Length: 321
Image (cartoon, rainbow, N blue to C red; front, side, top):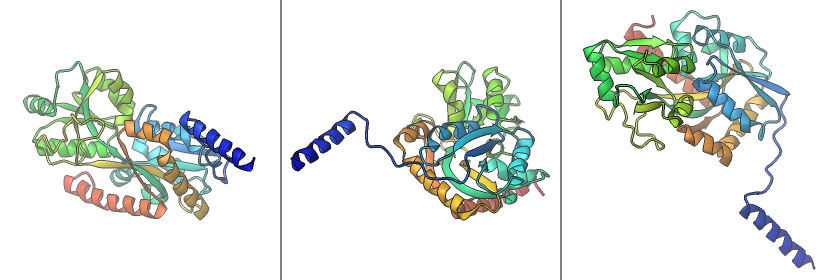
């Protein structure tokens, strides 16, 4: 009888897997805060805003807390950075970091800089792409450059202190054109100006373009990655088009300095579990995000190295002293 019951249990488990029910996952890890606020400087629909809102749909499978996204716009991230840097280091408040928070710190006099925050974890490497409206006159990067040589082009970036701005400036220099680089407070604002024809092209990320790509409103003309994107194999790299410009951004979280070691450990474990989650994998794969999780020590080194390289670039370009 015991063998029969065991066999029945195995059969039930096998049937559950076959039906897609699966076995219940472990309970989410205990966390010292009931509510966690994830701050972004991005406007609704911008890259960091989308990153956070998609992530929190799955995050409480691994951390036992309620997650809230707060958009704090202004000053190319300066207001958001100040809010987080001056919060208590108790695991309750974090900032969605990208290269923008480094650029803002290097290019502007702000109350709080990237040095006033502690990187907690980096999660993804994010593709930067050049896009235009589908019903516009530009079918390729060569069209965009040719127009900029004949008439002064207008290229959009999310804000003045961003990797997108660096990508646009480097392409402008490599192509030898005098395009106007127009800054915005977020990717959503820039999208409006690409769609209405005010801008020839914009520089952004797949996740903030997703809805417009699916609706057929925008087309990708090139990626600044070192190689073509798996999800868009027909989109050439900028380098393939003859311009030696390659940039790629990181995405992660930082908090006020002095985070408890147990909080840092929880976030690193949770992020490693999250990127292995089959449901979340479908989401970030569709956005062409490459998972590259690093805990606080690795994330801090990544940010510091990027800051040193960026400062050298900005000084060479005359954008920083």
